[in-house]
Image (cartoon, rainbow, N blue to C red; front, top):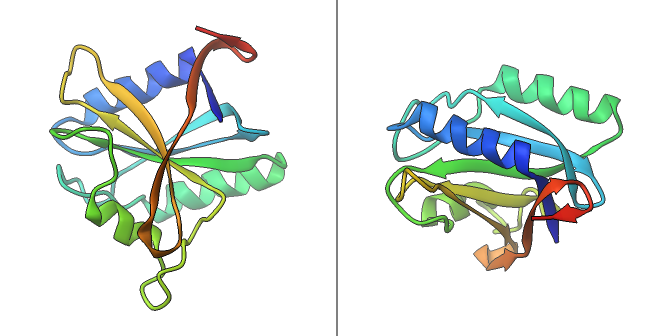
Length: 148
């Protein structure tokens, strides 16, 4: 189970809307499946169809995560015109090309769908070896430990 505070979920949705029509991307960090920090990372592709996290922003975020002894819990991006479900491109990006093994096996992938811009939807998935996709339970909480 993944627990995202309401404030962070709203930040993710706002970022997706700000970057529309292009996809946004970022990461979420924390411990024990509970998110404590949201990192907006610039989409170096500036594309409505794909994302690539800016290397400098990603490096800065991962260094802070390591320094604070947190875990990189979630890699996320938005889908501007489709549902919050991993595309084939998303699956390919999550796997090592030669082996089809997951690059980040312990990290979840979240998607923010802007199909309904008035009510963006967030869902979380695990992308496993061979490209198997499993939806994970996502709880958006008013504050940690208090589900909405």
